[in-house]
Image 1 (cartoon, rainbow, N blue to C red):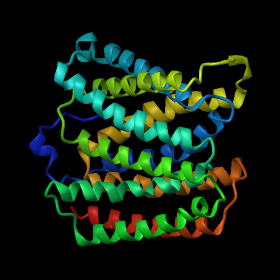
Image 2: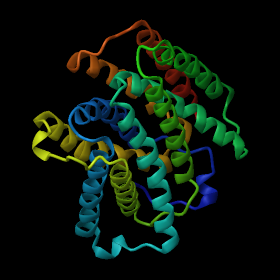
Image 3: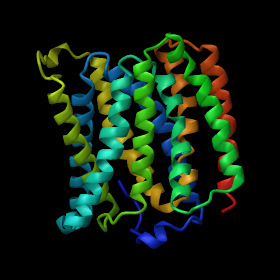
Image 4: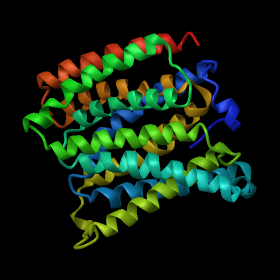
Length: 311
């Protein structure tokens, strides 16, 4: 899901990238669209198996994107070297199978708003990865992450207190680690020259892997398509078109066009959208950990965005 010209590893490692109007537009799309996907996922898994539905979502989106690339740029645009395909598969497995797949599974027991808020751990892991490669984030960025982690600590209390399944909470945290690793890796590996081609391969790899995991989990046993609700089908369609094609493509483009710590701020804004939609549509409770923790992470994103904007 890449939407800009490819960069070499040296350029990708450069921490200073110009923040243009296109970057802010794409970031706004990721903020709003991805915030709504947590609601969509929750509705899908009400009647559909988690990994099979997630796999179907990304396979469909990947095929649509590949078809669009062939139509717009010609079939030759889908060509890639073995190394480029391998890199796309690796990133797709980390982002889609690991990052998204675990969130989908967790939302069978965790409210959509809480799941989104827990994903706020992403910037923490990104900063750790950056520091490990010699890139020293500004002190204000580190401060923003620490503030966000304080909010995360508040948000884990429902799992610790037994209000929700602790296993679900831990799955979302694990998903955030894998998503951070995939995001970090995507800016440092060689992907297909056409950014949309790389996106299609990532979605197809993650989608196929999701189906395989679903089959291994036995999600196909007793499968009855007629038992799936209309709401679940509609939500799945929304996730394919908006969540995958629009949101994920914009996100992967941002990984090349903007500072990684700025891109990762979506994890602080998405929860606000997700919590609001979960409360309005699914009547999810607004408990004090959600309100307090959400307020803390929103304050943290303001610190990080203002710092990265100066780069």
